Image (cartoon, rainbow, N blue to C red; front, side, top):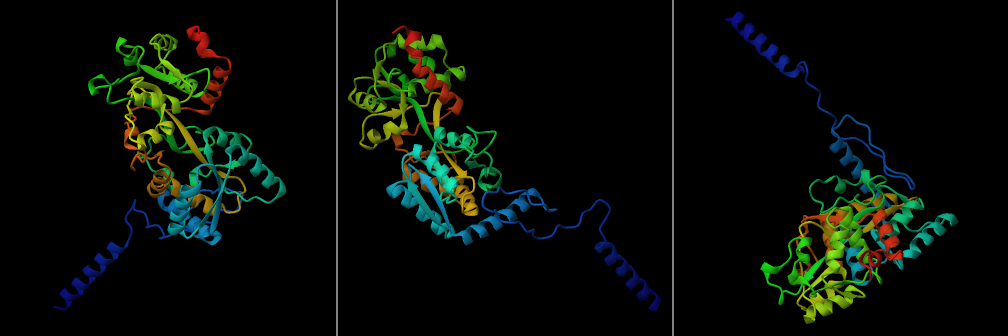
Length: 388
């Protein structure tokens, strides 16, 4: 009996020993956490070294940045659109989320670059980030006053949530980040155009039914028409023959969209070729009979950008603010305050309902295309093409 008991004890002991010993090919569990240094002014974050998976390592590094940002306690932004109630809404929501004060300095966009360079020259830098048009931000990038924080922002690692990628206009440096868009698409008067008559593709505008019933911005007076021409031609949607045929449809030319939309609402025309949501919003809110339509082979999108400024005094708070502005919450707060279409597609469209056409195929204008459209405007390319 004693021999049997001894044998059972030995078997149990050997079983426990085997269970506690790693088998061949198995790895030890990684440590529960890693340390990551916050960002110092004028620097960018490196990739933390650890034996954790990249996601866990990045999360730990981000937690360190957030902790350092709260110690900085503030972040300063240059903006020409965060004015009045818009700026108050963004700053209030960010402060409630992180306890960090957002200071907003408004003015004309063209002033910001010179102010930033002056601050840096005097060693008295105030601004941490800037918001503005894609062209303005790109000029700052060329002046080397911006720094890329793309790799530090967890929000930008999300997949499948973007109408267009935030790096769409700056895929190499990733400093000029797209965070909202403005759409140029045809608008109809729904009282005059039946659903069955609504154009689906750009070629539909060349049918005889539309002759003399369309309006568009005059290419002699604004570069916006050229922006559409450049993008649609580069995308192989329009060509010179299409533009000549569109001109033979006898469209009425207007100085700006602000003139075209009243004409559309009054029934003087049935369709605006290159309607911009920035111009249409006021008329939609007033109940004018206008309706954006989705042209399935391409909708022109211009963009607005945000970027971090090199050497800003609050680098960690800057990263936290930018990350929040790309999150569902930040995009929703800013989009609702401004009534804009944001770059995320998993949040509501905050434009008036009449502007909310589906964007089947977004075509984003690049900085090079902006420059090209400006040059075509100067050369009166459209007039030469159609012989007017």
